[in-house]
Image 1 (tube, helix red, strand yellow):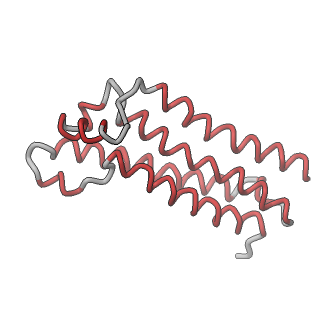
Image 2 (cartoon, rainbow, N blue to C red; image 1 turned 180 degrees about the vertical axis):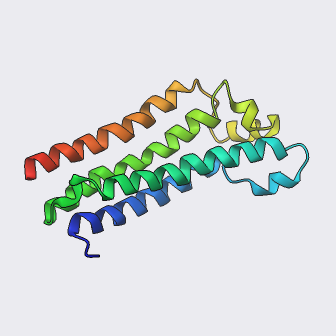
Image 3 (cartoon, rainbow, N blue to C red; image 1 turned 90 degrees about the vertical axis):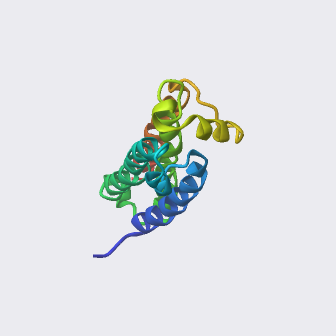
Length: 156
């Protein structure tokens, strides 16, 4: 399988942005597998792991697949790099969506113990209303691909 410049650039930028996003979500203790073995943390850490895995691993893979196979990646010139760079930024949605789902005023106690919530608050990550993070997260998933589509239309 031959990849063009746009597809190669997408893999490069998406990988870097996804790795950066995974570093940011560490404050949320998303993959706390040691908590599975502690009686007081077992339920919350398993719930958090499952939801975090879906949001931080499965959704970005689906997003990458859709972008990679989209018409956006048909530009085989340096302009394809620009289109790919914008499209790749949609992966930043995962940090906002994860925060909006597992660490909001309605669900924080379902995903965290009271001690964990206090530790997270010390890192300036308070449980906010979920729409404070979900709306910007969805915005990342919509706005950056729209910018890429607009650039694709201009360059094609």
